[in-house]
Amino acid sequence: MQLNSHRRQFLAATSSWLAAIHAPLLHASVLTNDTATEPRLLHMTLQSHRLEELQQFYQKKLELPSSAAATDGFSVRTGPSTIQWKPADAQTTPFYHFAWNIPENQFAEAKAWLSKRTPLLRDNLTGKDEVHFAAWNAHAVYFRDPAGNIGELIARHTLKNSSTKPFSVESLQCVSEIGLVTDQVTPISSDLQKKLNWSKSGTELSFVGDAMGYLIVAPIGRPWLPDRQQKAAVAPVTVQVNQKLAEPITWAKQPFTIKGKTA
Image (cartoon, rainbow, N blue to C red; front, side, top):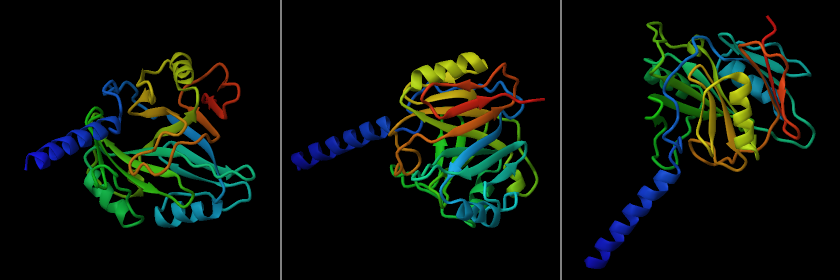
């Protein structure tokens, strides 16, 4: 009996330790103050090796407004934000993590809406098909599309964006996250903070921006939430932000470009 008791105590301690090191945010320093009043991320250009399947998924299953099929890709629009998909370079299979803001009071409705259209991903630690970010005061639900991209609907309760309309595809208010995967997390996130004049939090995983738009600078190989089945890998990203920039922000040997708005 004493041995079993010690074993239970050891397993409980080990479980707590594992949960701690794999906690969703990893850092308690993630910002909860929101300074932007308009979406920060206006346009993203991503690549895919499965364009036709992706268009069918976003246009038919999720019912997002989509451009007509074309050899050079397609785009989907949510509010002021657009995601444009272009053909991937030969022999590459890029995938991304991105998120949409939804009304902060409609998480349950959003989860039900999404689950009718595609399977929800489960947190491999909790077994739940949703994630509560205590530091952000937010709830999120995730899905995986045919190209392996991990999409997220997130209700950020710090935002005053509640709605009384029935939840629909029009409730996806804007793109609010995009992952930038690199072996240079600290210098790139610090550079973004300085050149964009955005807030930054986190170290091993850096969040640059706020609840109206985060550039998530992630290390190569870090497992993505919620099921942690896919390890972050470098993929080309071009982002147009909702502010003017004197010139695009780029880095040597990094496939990222941050552009300012033109008007």
